[in-house]
Picture 1 (cartoon, rainbow, N blue to C red):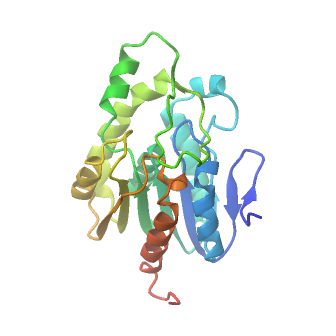
Picture 2 (cartoon, helix red, strand yellow):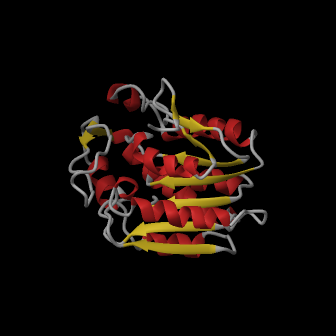
Length: 250
């Protein structure tokens, strides 16, 4: 039985020690895709929050009328409410959730930043298709995951309007990366077919932090939080987080 408390909007939370991990899922995805890793963090005693992104607790039609800025601003408010209760906070962002995490980190003092198969450069092929499409949505397509028994919760379609915004999001990430100063752990699947693995090297170069770590994942595709490397992701993250606290108990 999960020790994470699920709210009516599909978000999860656990109140533990005064060190918090704020986890951000992907666009058109769900908090459930990060729940199992969040559970491991909670079992280690950390406070955990996995909010549901704006428009993601309803249906695809609702999400079609949202902008990335609207989604980000609601998320930012939730981050502030969570971090205000704690001594320090670590951000954990997956995919486009990683882009949101970078945005928050570039404007706030945080204890650490963990990025898993994160957006940095725009997915050029997907953006090109969206720019030339007259449709409102595009099909999500085959889920990029190595373990075909794993369960992933995503919408069946992606709003074209949100895809078109990714180029501007990426431009802001490139510009603001130098303003990120917290220690960073980048976890990247070598076989990520959604965002190019080489983007991790760009992040490593552009981000302004003095302490930066890159860990490659060899047994997962894009949806690594529910793929074969799930346990390794959790363990590497915990090792990184413990290293941020000089009062840690080894």
